[in-house]
Amino acid sequence: QVQLVESGGGLVQAGGSLRLSCAASGRTFSGSNYAMGWFRQAPGKEREFVATISWSGGSTYYADSVKGRFTISRVNAKKTVLLQMNSLKPEDTAVFYCAAERGSLYYTRVDQYEYWGQGTQVTVSS
Image (cartoon, rainbow, N blue to C red; front, side, top):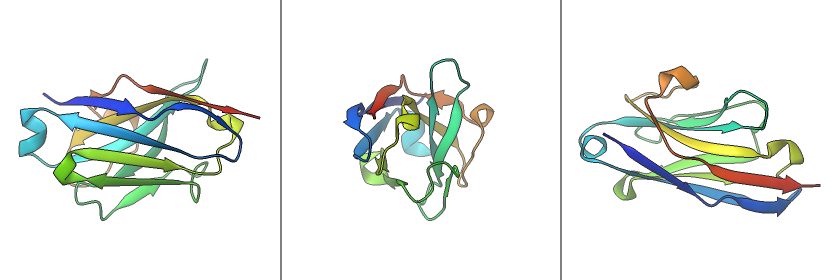
């Protein structure tokens, strides 16, 4: 089993920055390679892909809507994945979720991930 806990959400003005953190735990996570991803879900909308990173951290992929503004990174020794969000816009307002899936590559679809955190709220005011 893998447990994921997100933190770092909050209220920020447009143009501001936030850094989300996802802490992973579990015996299974320690013994295998896991790709990690960030997704978000705004009220009344489906959960959507934001960013993903391979186990090694050498490969990343972003949604077009966040490319150039968000950066995903990971510190495997600390079992932590980060999402640095700059130049935030009101349309970035959503609950952000961390996800993990066994594998060395990365994944961009909701249905490709088995493990999910509980989410952290990000609100960007105009």
